[in-house]
Image (cartoon, rainbow over all chains, first blue to last red; front, side):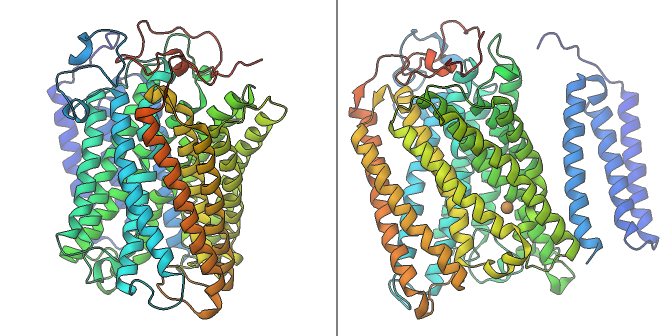
Length: 94
Length: 535
Ligand SMILES: [Cu+2]
């Protein structure tokens, strides 16, 4: 484990993450007032996905870590997205 | 680890750590002791759940009230299911043989996080206690182990402890999964490349990923059901605008992959045993590795086959049926590989081999009847009948259970340093196998005749099949008693095994002492050959 360097994030980048999360939370509340039918769910999911990505990449250091972690995380997210897709596939044809 | 300083060449069963007696076990971070803790816990709860199963079968030996009424019967199949699924087969082989043998097979001293490993067992025990607290907190649930909405939040029966207990048991499973992924990535002995790793660790690896990724889904689903019941949040309740089919989606998004959590390590154990008793290297090592990973991956997307009659959209039905047929392919690949491994081997007919080959037999019956359930037209007819019950007992009990017994008889001398009585083991196996087939085969016929599952009573025309099935249950329990008595007795009084390698296996665990020492190796072994080089 000694071969891994530790990246120290600045307060600035943490602040950026915090602000981005606030803004996106506001956005997901705001979009509920728009009437977009089934796309309301899609937009809410996309915003939530964006928030998760910000947390993973900067706050949880995926960007600075061994590439292997990024590959695994992406793979896991692909499975997760497919599971969501298959579930909504049922709902969209009901 | 604090226990490391004690003398070398004292077996893990005998060393003295910081604590004495039973405390030296329940606070031990040694992967081998943790594995045995799981084994003993499972033995206790398997016995309880098996007795519940036997009582249900006695109830069904004649129509009408035999020994219990409907409410008792409903609670019995629920508790039987919860114990068997969440406490026995889901932790199953990974918790017992994964813990015990993963480090030995990859040449490590322990798992990556020994304390977390012990914590997993404690969380498991806490989960069990929470489930059992039902007895004192208002009685047992009657929902079936699936807790289907909306019944699970409308029933007057007490479901909260069972829901919450299953939720806690999930954490144990996740932590074991994380531990194994890290162990396999970081702690393989020098020279053990990915493709020199034995197949049992490979299946543990595939399983661990499912444990980590799928289990949180059941966790949140069970919590939502708790919230639905206590607070009436209305996610699943149609009266509040919720969708009960969403419950089924979420439940099976976990619970189908969970079937692979149960069966994949079993397949791995079978892949270890067959080459050893055929004196031949495994046929198609890479095909087995790839099919394990393929099963783990495709297995995420087939859950809808549990919901063909629930009211999903037509297109979703086709998609799930197609994907279900797809996932049958990698399972069939494994069966071909196993049969080809035995083919022209010089067979050593010992108890593990009997369990392993009968595994293939019952697994094939379970798999092929699974296709009847996976195709839409036939599914509608046999859905929720005894056919389904027979099918999944062939897979979960016939598959995982037989693999577990095969693994136990295979690794027993390494684990306890003693050998069981071979003739009693064989008699037990034969009795069990005969009883198993007599118990479950008639249930296929009963299902096709239209006998629904989960009823304490039935129409007179189902009587014959039920009598045969119930007698089979008694025979099977007798077989299980012989097997378990033989193993428990032999673990204390069996003939001592001093050689490292009683079966002539080629994987690393047979190079450790019998039974292994605290840290398994004086020196970490170097790996130069593949795991199954017989010829
Ligand atoms: Cu399934």
